[in-house]
Length: 112
Image 1 (cartoon, rainbow, N blue to C red):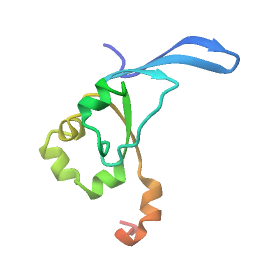
Image 2 (cartoon, rainbow, N blue to C red):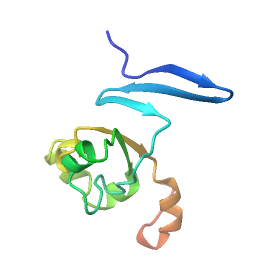
Image 3 (cartoon, rainbow, N blue to C red):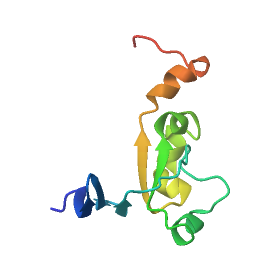
Image 4 (cartoon, one colour):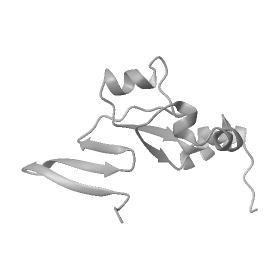
């Protein structure tokens, strides 16, 4: 069975390294510029442009913002974030923990 993640160092120079991170949706060459698509997509660029024009291999999305909008039910109905956003590349999603505090006026946190 192939692992879901692998990492291979290609070249080193002092403390720097060039590597390839292999993920389920393709390879990510590092170091990497990772655009922030908070809600799963970049504003002003189509997914096709992300791949073909700027060679984007991975995008950052925010779990908390996705939870608020479009929401879990819509993402499930559409078949997940990749299908919803028409993005075949990799996503790195953060937990959204900071936003729970910084956007606290939008939610209520209880012991439950």
